[in-house]
Length: 172
Image 1 (cartoon, rainbow, N blue to C red):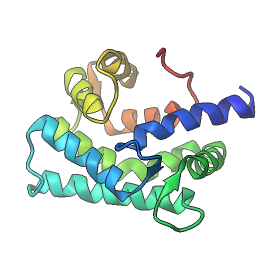
Image 2 (cartoon, rainbow, N blue to C red; image 1 turned 120 degrees about the vertical axis):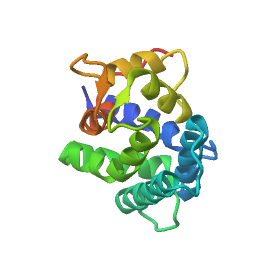
Image 3 (cartoon, rainbow, N blue to C red; image 1 turned 45 degrees about the vertical axis):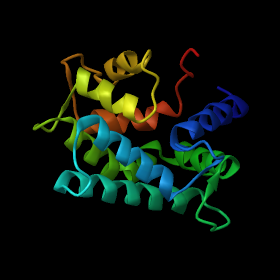
């Protein structure tokens, strides 16, 4: 894959973070993502799980801003995202995924419904809450279950998160 194609794919991923579609990623986008997951699973924001998810969203935002907010305006525009993500992913994709770990852990805790692993159905619900189109959520959830055992662990999600940026775009 050439550099231009790689950057185009990463730029496409920008939209998954820009929850309010205002052209930049900021703290509110991460809070909105947490709120959407909590709503999808009927979990109160003030609950232990809700607070952990919001804390994870804040940690994710701080990590994202740390690698991509070049001008320090507390917003990550598309160009900053592409530049920051390309640099980090080419260097060490798993380190990029690690900034997402607290948030992804919180999502799993909310969506696992009493366990520490997601089922395909709970993964689909979480993905849909996070903005994945309903028509492709089953396919994305199945891809998270790399060994086909019907259980999706935190490590499965982290590995998929890093790989997401270097895979072909889904069919529109």
